[in-house]
Image: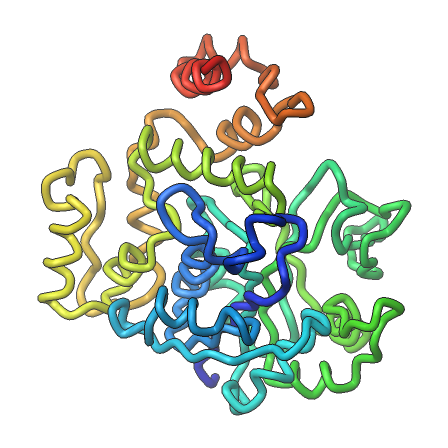
Length: 360
């Protein structure tokens, strides 16, 4: 099978984040210590993808090139394409048709953040599918904000509905799409919706009609965040900070992924390790060394699996960091299952830290 290529769709005007995004692209805003676009980029890299096109607006293209460069520092190749106007997610496959040149693709939205110890394996499984499309769903409390999958009683996909007023399920379609080489031609056959856009749901429906759509359900051991609002941007930053500072888990680091994948030369590997203090802190991360000449995502999967998470699992992080009650100012009022979590000792420190932050 032809090597899959990647697309990061980083367009739009970011109106939900105004006035912050009046002067800078949403996807270049910081999520804790890294620009937002680093996080979707690392997802594609974990899938073994080394050729990536970033699609953005005419005003933001230069900014992305300054931040990301040509990708050679991470052992990958980055290209850029301007989207003249935001005419729908499916338009990205038309714009990238020449870049793809008949190759299958994986597209990720520039404001989506994915995290989970089993993520590399999930991505590899999707990459092995040579025909059709694979999408990833996540259970949410407000499915009316997203494209939603309609399952029958046997769990078979019947339809994908865009922002339904009465959602058929709470399984939202995340902003990560694996497609075969037919995606650009299918996108050309999509009719604009009532809002004048080439909807990604229409493209996915074409795969569904051909019996070529697969769905991967992300369980509670994964985290998915759409960092497109002020609240979600803050939540994402706090989430990444907790994993990074309190647990020593690297999130959204292209250099870290490139190192685990074996894409850096020996000199660059040593320089990166020293820069990130990985040589001085091997016990904290318990990182595994790549086996032999394997340059597959199995390496990064092993590294994540062998990390000492100190009893703080992704599931605990989601239920205690993301599923919280807030007042209108966004401050944390209470945590779900706080007593149980405090007794177990898994998230007590994090809760105390957040309470202090709220009172300051």
